[in-house]
Length: 424
Image (cartoon, rainbow, N blue to C red; front, side, top):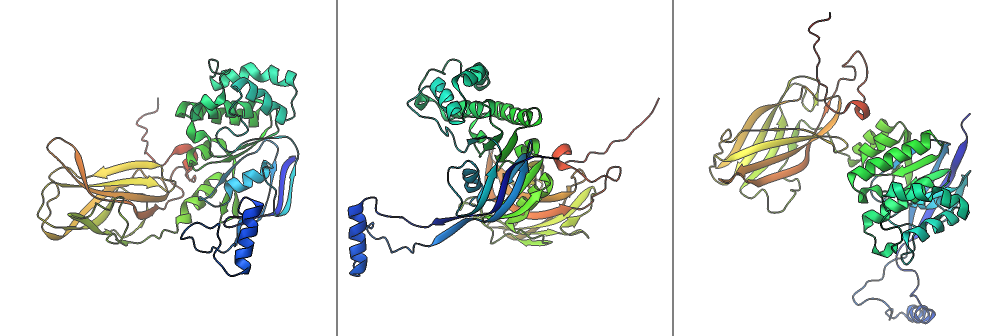
């Protein structure tokens, strides 16, 4: 039977909005006297209106338990409550209501350099962090060389950390958190500061300490690929509420669908926000239509017919059209585009009809980034109109290979056909 190391029961966290107090007793008394007399607050900023001191519920009735050795991802939009939850788990702050139970020591890394004193050297900070976790000097010394080697900080370990770059900070901070003895490792979106090689090194280390040492990992990230790579369970937060707890792929799919986009066979592009306000002046994309029988919900097949309506101020022979296809988690999948000289525009409305090869796309939800551009004599592209996440569509076929459901986390987003020619 699995042993629970974290148990969160009906936790609420409430914050008060606006400034609390004036910073000094004298200032607070002046503000109080002004309010009693109905006068303007003498400590308020010039032109500042009175702001109601409302309350904000960062976490709203959150409950879950985590077993020993589990690797749990926590995802959600900005402001969903992820960092607040990790601060509660790290005991940086306390819940307004509810209970949180722990069975083991917690090592947390909530931001770059968490727990580091800038005036101390890297060596001194390693020992200080170990002491905070309840380890003695002998235990820390036994892990010290391994920590420094993992962080690749041999040359700088006796330098004050205030002189470290953000990447050096995160390397040493992660190495300390991962190597010192703690049963629970809590990580916020901090690995984004490190380079790609070190990120992979950290993810591998977190996986090893969970599988081999039985340590529990809680990991927050907006990078869905790292969530797939590390976690075997995922929690989705939305406006302080826990809305899903379970399979990683289902969690990512739910998170990707939280933008509330709709699948429409005819999409009005004229009123969509451009990636720059200088686009869409000379040539503007007005509408995108799926013209096939399946509309925007297609089966796996070779070609997807479409119609693009463009408005051009003048006659042009230099316009090209490009369509970039992304999976629902924003992973780029493929690109399709026209050749130079293939599109000739008249002044006014133009309708371009064509087909996109979608035969390799695996089942799932995708979106398109559309771009109209021209190429000058030097081979440089000049964007005329660009729309990000302009069109959504789904590929619907859940049993395409040996009657198995497609697993994006293992196989990617392209389903390439195989043909066996001979068996000897």
